[in-house]
Length: 319
Ligand SMILES: *[C@@H]1O[C@H](CO)[C@@H](O)[C@H](O)[C@H]1NC(C)=O
Ligand SMILES: *[C@@H]1O[C@H](CO)[C@@H](O)[C@H](O)[C@H]1NC(C)=O
Image (cartoon, rainbow, N blue to C red; front, side, top):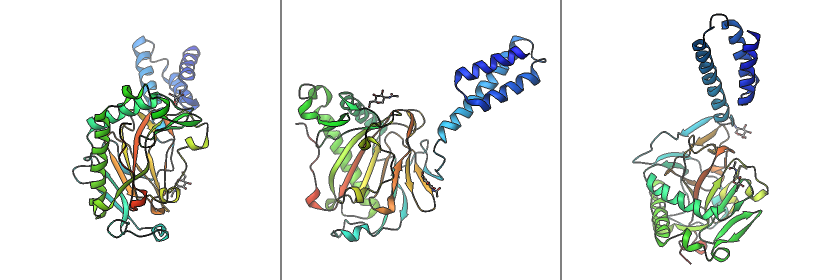
């Protein structure tokens, strides 16, 4: 009996599943060992222990970030056809900038929709991100690819993909890819305008607007540290509305990596889902961060909008 308990203990040590699992299994083995002599009993016990410990590890990984107090939208939900809108009171950030009637936020909040971009489109964009980012990438943390400026993470810095990879660029992007990007941008813009009651022609794409890839390898430089709380309008004064298009699924492509709105009284998350668009007014009312990715790879696109025509940029195009 003692040796059987030792076998279990080694199994759990090898699986890396923590001491509490080890003790539970050992206790069970001691209590039930004499009744389960046959190999069927052993297999059943093993299976039971494996599922208990598997569930424990899963829960541990899933709730790694236990500061989350409320989930606004889960990965498995489908928010369609109307976006789900969560109003918040506007901060005073917008008073420090010129106001643009018909565009500057008067009502603030956050919204989530799964009906602006299809999962198929998200998959095409994800492959585009994979191809582009496979040319280089940061040493850890987040890697970004900005199709507009061409900035691509490379080691501890950035290179211009259109200059540095002139010969490869034709294998990475096609004209259709840029068309899809533009098309998706237009639809997101229309969704933002409708949700916030704006004139969509008064809203402009601004920079930076970029693809991001995040895995569990920790950042080696500060600019690759994606998990710090931040306010978009403080970082980029030109931002008025920020949107995120998710290109992979929380829970199956990666864990961790949830988007978290940090409110006074709660940390509220949106779970990424391929094709899901989350958008919000960019001021202090939407202080946010991204939870560290625990495993897998998370792809997303950030598409940002301004009300100030001086900060407008044109859609990315084939060089
Ligand atoms: C994460 O991505 C970096 C490149 O950005 C790569 O060097 C590293 O091996 C990846 N880590 C994992 C765990 O896949
Ligand atoms: C929200 O999360 C932050 C850091 O992750 C934590 O310091 C804070 O206490 C949390 N807020 C609430 C209301 O739980």
